[in-house]
Length: 349
Image: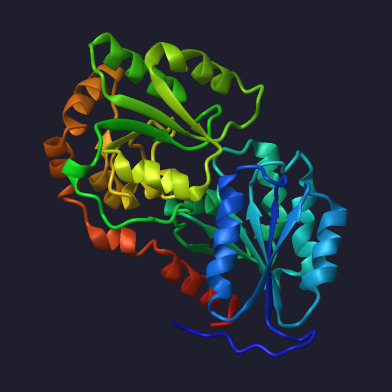
């Protein structure tokens, strides 16, 4: 484990992590940023999180004044997150802070429209380091900006939910099906509800739980889930603390995460379920790396998934499904490894 030698005063080595977030709001990228701050701080670096109310020139100027002006400082932008707004002000970061000390983790890129992708032209033309959670997103960025000067890297993300108990054996788990993640559009909850309805129509009495945070009180998907919860016997666990989420995941056997664009390494909810020993049924696509494809059960149709779940929620089905996983694949995505990668990138290891 490396330690960062720091000194007191304005020239101490320092990293500022920047994210937009509302106080108290549940956001995977915001949670990831705080986890990253904690694990890097444990290695001796003065690292702070700057939570902007939204992207603006004034917000970036504040970042520069409070932590980005020192010669031994770096600024690391996390994008996108909730409350980011429509402002293109994030594009000003390379101009204000300077590319050599600027890092950007793009948790999403391919989902952006052409206008929002252009926000990152200034990063591409600068000496900034642009980080992705997987090769698919990295290749898409490099294709969009073939004339780039920036450095691109892949650093896998880790789970925001720490495993709170030793591995729970199959027979000690409950025949429970869970969904875990943000409750909002483009998360696959429509497919989850369709499979739940098929299971109930077939007389299945297994417990079904939705664990997550609504993207907003007026979200149509959240309203639909809430309206059908009683009808389908779904238990809702909303806005839970990480410890409660870990307890829920540790007791269940199967997670169904039907991401519309396919599971990939940017899906922290899938990583959390795998780390907690659940069988993960999910969609595969060109974004799915080989190790993740081999570690999950493919979702093809409502009928096939409902039939598969009847076996997977049993102790024998769970045991057989998790037996063939490669433990090294998940071990490479643990937080200590992620922290060391970041310190090396900052040049502060």
